Image (cartoon, rainbow, N blue to C red; front, side):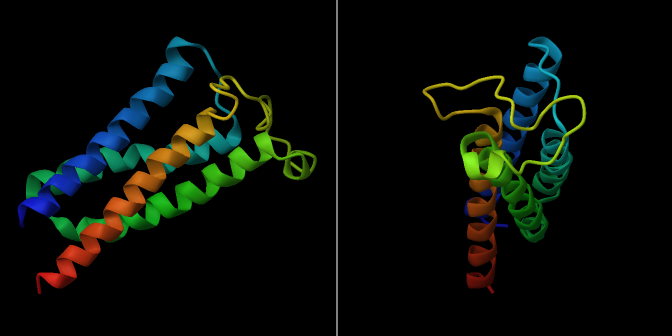
Length: 141
């Protein structure tokens, strides 16, 4: 595996690790209870930490397809979640999310940075890097 792919795997691991630590910080230290959509995003983010670490140690760039799929699905959920927080059209039709409403904003830095926005940013970074890895892998053949 070339250095570009190796560094890309390390980058994906770092992004997913920071996102995981961030979500755990918000829930376990700050006491922000995750809503249902937050849980779906966590379900897609947390495994990325483990599988990319294993792929990095094994020098396995083929994991990029898996990370691309997980990050695209997670990104779609994050985008929808952010939309129901920020767009009146979507927030009026938001599904009931159990005890914690999905429209709630625990943080709102600079008027637009919310927890789903942070997750969306991480998923986008992982998706872009995954597609880059797929491209580089195909060029190397």
